[in-house]
Length: 175
Image (tube, rainbow, N blue to C red):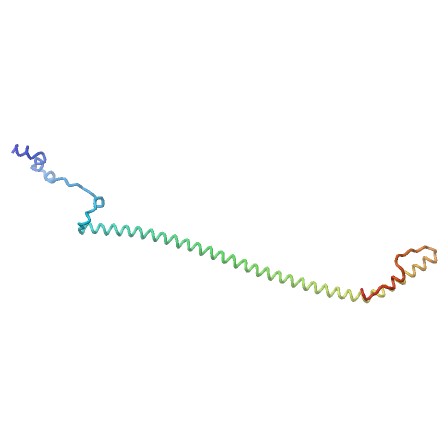
């Protein structure tokens, strides 16, 4: 037996010992993902791993796509809000512009009314002057003649640039 033990080597000694753990040959432990099975041999367990891997990849990609869609939708919502804000601003400006137009028109109407009122007043004053001016001119003529006579009686030399004929030549209708 010793000869058999020596020729068979030390591993045979372990097998022949009474320890059952020693009787089993050590097996390498590899994680299933680290050593994928060969392409030609898919067993039930390895096809489950492949399906699980595919589902994981699809889920990750789907999550990325969902996130991108959420980002796009949030940007669209922000753009909609900005567009609505611009529309409101434009509406406010249009309302203000309409109000400004109405105010300008109102001011123009007020000014036009004032002008018409002043024209009527001026027309009234013009008529009053036309009625009063001839008698006023006659009174001025009479006063001028009276002053001339008084100055001549007292011997005061009078120098007047306005001649009696000039006063009489005034046409009252032009006024």
